[in-house]
Structure formats: structure tokens, C-alpha cells
Image (tube, rainbow, N blue to C red):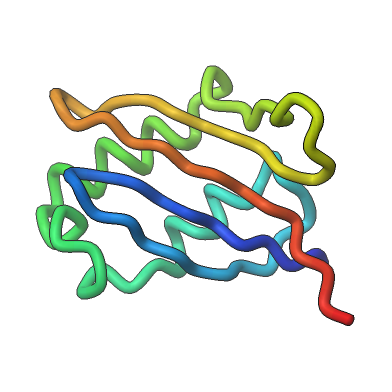
Length: 94
């Protein structure tokens, strides 16, 4: 398992967390199953949470490697009118 740092932007808020996952392609599914809904106000809405979970499981939201940066990826999308952005960084603990 690898450690990833996620920077999640939604509805004017920025939320940072770390997640263990096998790859950048699976980290968002692992994150959504572990995220503390109390830390992100929109996640307390069951309908929003379900729609975001569906969005993140869709193959269209595969992480894209950031140009010129090692081990850093981006995923963006929208749930209804709410744009979201994930920056995913593979984190090396030394």
C-alpha cells in the first residue's frame, strides 16, 4: 500500500487528508469510504454523498498526471452545480 495526500476543494472549502491505497487509480474510492462526513459539510447530505461516490467510481474520473510534476495527479468534476477538484500526491515518508 502507498500513502497519498489528497487536497479536496468543494463549495469554497479546502480539505486535506491522507489515505492508504494501492494506486492513484483507487485512492478516491478508498477515500470516500473512509472520509469523516463531519469534516466536510456537504457530505452530511446523503444525496450529495451518494452522487459524489457514484461520480468517483465512474471511469471518466481517472487521475491525470500533472505535467512536469512527479507523483501528482488531478481529478475534477461536478455533482449537480458543485464543482470539485482533487489534487492527489503520492507521499513518501522518510
